[in-house]
Image 1: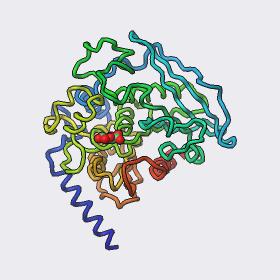
Image 2: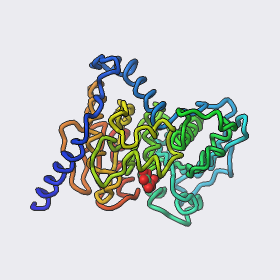
Image 3: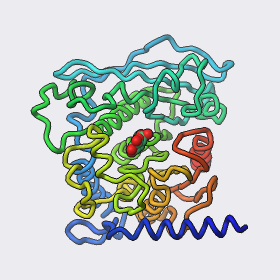
Image 4: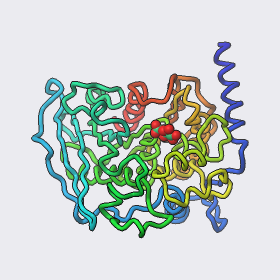
Length: 388
Ligand code: GTR
C-alpha cells in the first residue's frame, strides 16, 4: 500500500517534470490555425500535414515506395516445425535500382490452422544469429516464436541490417546505394536508416498480402528501441498495419522531445551518436527543441484509428517512461475523433501494470531496456482483445 502511494506520487512528480519543459505543439490545431474537430478534417488536412513534417524534418524521405522491381522468392522449401504446430517459410524479398540489388530475408512461422493467421512482424535490431534462429536451436525472448505460435499468431521477423546498415558510413550502401548511388544527390530531407528499415517492413507487408496463410488485415509491426522508433514510423505511414507496437523506443520514438526528464536522451545526443538514423534537417533541433514544429505524440496519433501499443521499462530512464506515457495521453484525442478511446485521463501505472482497454495501450514492465516475453504477452493480450 505504502509502495503504491509512493510510486503514484513519484509518477505524478515525473510527469510534472516531463511536461514542464515547454509548450508542446497542439495535436489538433493545423499550421493555418484550423481546429480539427472531425475525423474527415484529421484525415484530409492534419494527418497529411503532420506526416509531411515528420518526413521532411525528422526521419527523411525514401526515394521509392514499392519499387516495380520487387520480387518474392523462397529462400528454402517450406517446412513443418515446432512439433507440427507451425509452417516455416523463408522468403527472399528482392529489389533492384540504379545502384544494384537489395534483399530482405524474412523468417516466418505460421500456425497450422484452418483460417489465415494474424501476425506479429518484428523489425529486429539485434544480431540475427542470436535472435532469429530459424532452426529454433537458439531461443531468445526477443523473438519468442514458440510462445507466439502457441497463442495462435504468426511470428515474422527480418533483420534491419538487410535493408540498411546500422552505422554511419556516408549512406554508401544498403537501400541508399540501391536507389541513389550518387550520394552527392542527397538533400537535408533524404531518409536515414529508420526510414529505410520502416520501408523494409512495408515491403514485408507487400509479401504478406500475397500469402494466403496470413491475414493481412491483422498484422502488428513491433520493434524495440531503435526498432521501436522504426515500428512507429512504419505504422504511422503504412496504414495496412492494423497495430503498431513500440517497445522502449524513447527519444524520437514514443518519448516527447520537449520532455525535460533529465536522465532521458534528447535530440542533441541522438543526432550526435546516431547520425545515420535521421535526415540532416533533424540536426537543427539539437538543444533547440522548441523550434521543431512537431512532437512525438503526433507520431503516435498518426496510427489512429488503428491500435497503438507503447511499452516502457521501469528502469529504462534513458527512454523516459513517464514521457512516453504522457505522449500516449496527448495522442489520444486523435482516436477520440473516431469515437474510440485512448488513455486520456489516466495516470502513470505501477511497474508490471498497464493502462489498457482502449486503442492506445500503455504498459510499464518492471526492469531494464529489453524486449522480453512479458512485453510480447502484453502485446498479444491487446491483439486478443480486438482480434479474437
Ligand atoms: C541507444 C540510443 C537509443 C536507443 C538504443 C537502442 O544507445 O541512445 O535511442 O534506441 O540505443 O536502440 O538500443
